[in-house]
Length: 162
Image (cartoon, rainbow, N blue to C red; front, side, top):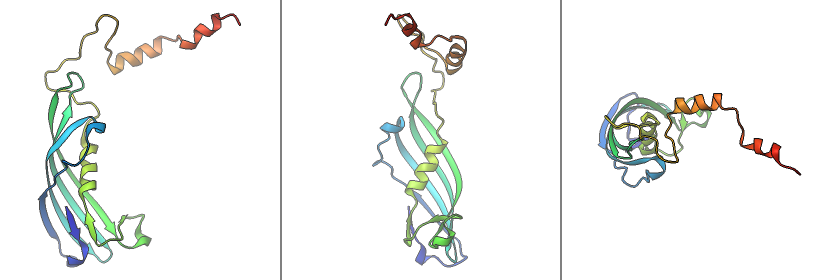
């Protein structure tokens, strides 16, 4: 989604609704399978050197279940407001963008990624059981074990004859 600041009338909101295609993004490093649907509604208002963008984003993310590694369709909805400026003196108050044409795709993607929980679990999925030679622990169990077990892997060095 792009907007040309020059075409906007000052103090007059302009609305735009567009579907954004993120098929070019490599989500494998983000532990996601993809983002098949993203609809963005934006209202742009130009005030002298400030462009205020109000965003409403609805997206569907295909995340990976932490327990089963199966796909989980995760609906995401985000409302946000972003200010852009072409005045370098206002850089601390708004995002400085020298160009008149502003692309919102990267900002929208960042907002979506920020809404995804760090651990996604498919409805009804259960934590795998421990097996022969390995244990599966929750974060809480691991933290409790770290607190109670004070042995260090370096303790074996005390028994060495040098």
